[in-house]
Image (cartoon, one colour):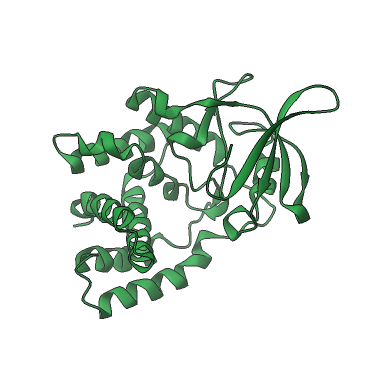
Length: 256
């Protein structure tokens, strides 16, 4: 099995316990994955059994790769994500890369977007993101973030019904976590009578279950989607750009 950045092989340990070997292509998003899994120690996430950091290899407990949250009715899936976010967002003493450290690069992207006439990324999206970002920085209670907890990154387990996989860990505001549940299961969103209302309802459900502030969730959704849209413009990924813009635009009314 594989995703975009890793190969996963089913194996058994010396004690004949089913497990998987995850062989990761070295990249920044995965640099702290093993340390985050060690912090969680199986509490809401796949359990790390062994690791060789220099080789980018982890031995993980085996989950049911054929069953993820895409198989659940949407509200149940969103509720599960909210419950997992509440459990995973723990305070830590060990250092992880703070979300705030990425803000300088984001502001540079926004400045570029404001200087150029970008018909593909609406100016109002870029300006809204640039305007709200300073208010989101400097969280007084940063926690360990998964940052990519969407429906396909939650698998059925044996010791728990659902467990998170494939974190891209950061340290920061827990409200940062909601956006991935909006841009995934996108076909269902497009079938909604009102796309914006559908996406806002998704965010509200996750935020309520996870105990997150709706205003901060809104701000982070706009920021993350503006960054995604500008990145997609650079890589010429028109589908990803269109999705990112649509999600951002759905939340602009809440910033006014």
